[in-house]
Amino acid sequence: MKHIRNFCIIAHIDHGKSTLADRLLDFTGSVTEREKQDQLLDNMDLERERGITIKSHAIQMEYVHEGETYILNLIDTPGHVDFSYEVSRSIAACEGALLIVDAAQSIQAQTISNLYLALENDLEIIPVLNKVDLPSANPEEVTDDIVDLLGCDPSEVIPASAKTGLGIQDILTAIIERVPAPKGNPDEPLQALIFDSVYNPFRGVETYFRVINGSIKKGQQIKFIATGNTYFADEVGTLKLKQHPQKEIKAGDVGYLITGIKEAKEVKVGDTITDAKEPTKNAIGGFEDVKPMVFAGIYPVDTEDYEELRTSMEKLQLNDASLVFQPESSAALGFGFRCGFLGMLHLEIIQERLEREFDMTVITTVPNVSYHAFTNKNPDEVIIVNNPSDLPDPSTLNRVEEPYIKATIITKADFIGNVMSLCIEKRGQITNQTYLTPERVELSFDMPLAEIVFDFYDRLKTVSKGYASFDYSPIGMRASKLVRVDILLNAQPVDALSALIHADNAYNIGKKMCEKLKELIPRQQFDIPIQAAIGAKIIARETIKALRKDVTAKCYGGDISRKRKLLEKQKKGKKRMRQVGNVEIPQQAFMAVLKLND
Image 1 (cartoon, rainbow, N blue to C red):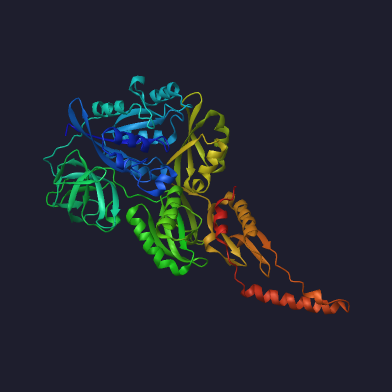
Image 2 (cartoon, rainbow, N blue to C red):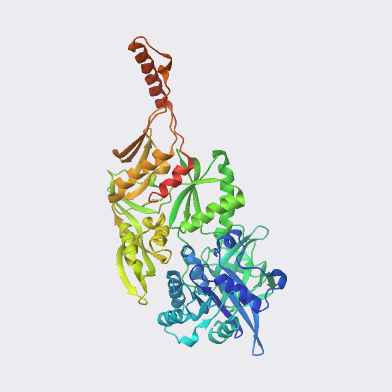
């Protein structure tokens, strides 16, 4: 065990984690010339195109230091705030972390939140100053920022460039010398932490784990503590670039396990694996089910594709256990699914994967969050509202509670005013303001989650000229004055466009929605009223004027009553048409409702 080192790489999005992982693999000879490629560990097309890591990836390297061979287990983690639960489990499987800071961009919000996660787990932090070869790099100043943040010695910060390979040897030496060897007792009952799982279409779910105590052998009967299921270990092994089957994996090491599980739901990240015959007395702490934060309806464009969409979603869920969905139907869109996502980026990625991997074109409704409603009849019973149409009637409603988050924003001092006014407009309350350096400020706000779902991140980048970085964590439910705004088209409610909105903003948003829909819905042969309503009260209205055919063109001269007779006949026809007419809502109208502030 003294020759094993387990470490992960943490950083803000786009600070060079995956590139540094590539260099470490090259330097330790873990990859042959033929296998080399950029972002080697990001194996999804989407990850490569967007330059982001969506799943954490584990790989084992061997490195000879002062004549002794060391096994290094690296876990590359995602940098985006939506996937922070995955990062926290990866951190729990390690003893050390490389904290990467971009020498041009300095410390950002996600760097700090991931650093706190690592410190909570008592990890040894090795600060790495990346991208020092860039002309815009500011190594001295950023080193001072890192020293202020960590309280370490400036000599401990390793200058590196993942692009040119500068400082890679120093990083490997630091990992071996500074990261402690794993502690654990190989003779105790098996206790292993699951930090990731991947679906293989031929072999079922592959579970990635780190053995804390005991050892896991091929052919052993094992048990997952959170689900209580027992399985047979068909294959265990270590994770090089390709999988290497082994007979046994001992305490301190990282490996994979294949048991032929077909349902990704059965393998929960953060769960504990133990022996079925001699189970461990205590599960590893910190396990929780991943909770979706944002909900949206996903519907097939053609209702006949409903079953196909269900199959696609199930296959996608095998690969991404944090996606939850349940069937629902809508009067406007037919049959579809109510899906829960970790955040807006997750929603975007799922939508894109459905289109790419399964050729499904889908309509996504307005995303919203999950509320708690309480009625006057029994004020203690919680009604969970994932869809605005589930909200009880306003006359029976006691109160509604909505989820709040603690938002941390790091920005340049010049943009404090803009950022504050944006957060206050989104119903945020400032709780803290700290100057990290004379130039950079960390602002903390308590905000409703619903307000950051739509366009908050884009607008934050706009008001701060791209400099602000943002991170959030949930802090529970708080009572709020919310109302349901319904949109009526030709006096028919369109359930896919209703939204739960704070009472103070309801009038403005209702008015904007009506104006936007007026631009996007094509004109018909009859007038179409578009109304926004709260309960039975109409708060805004726009009318799409009818296309008018000139029926009097053939009348020239003669008595006015001849023209009037034709116009009356046309008026009756239009009235009848309006009673039976259906209004088609184009797909861009659903999307436009999200972008009301643009």
